[in-house]
Image 1 (cartoon, rainbow, N blue to C red):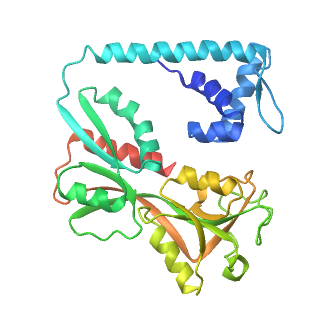
Image 2 (image 1 turned 90 degrees about the horizontal axis):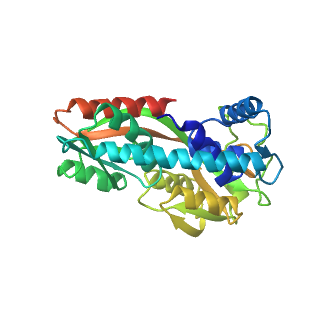
Length: 302
């Protein structure tokens, strides 16, 4: 049962913003906007009132939302009851990943695997790079989704896919802020001058995060001791602290958009985090495990 369109209107109602809903749905904002225009043309009536602050559902939009929520509920009930008719799983794949990106990709991969391998049970284990490597080496995990930053273990296989730059974001109102609204997604960024941000409060990734060490090295090379006011291993928390104007923060470039009131800077040298799928060396992958890895690679490269 295809309920993507129903999830679109639910996300719009929940987030009140095309950009935030698109991010939650993991699609582009233009694609979501095109869908909304198409469905409104098809129905012949507006579903939302567009404003600068927040999208507001019209009465027709509220009715459409209610019907969409019911369809999603029925779909989930249907899948749950059908799953109960299946025989016990013949294979269990234990997959490790971070509570942030790892969890998002697991959620996207789950329906693909469930449809093609209904007798394979997938388990998701929240963990960060170093713990993930140890668990794989000790056969407590089968596959992991991590970052290449700082990884060099010889007992682990790394299959690389999908890289992203780690950049420093400065919120509006702080030294070094500039209007980045016209920047294109792949445009070069100015290199950070640490003298500009010497007194700016910093929101730092905690040591569990793969790129934490690389950021600290850049600060040390510049002879700069960051004024750290908060640390976290949760990308969403760091992002919200940044958007609230609490301080500057380093995040993957695709975590922010030109519409956000922040200014991105590159580190020198540039910090690149490459997503990797990892598993134990000399492990013979099952057909389902290889399918999971291949589809994960495809999603990362989009």
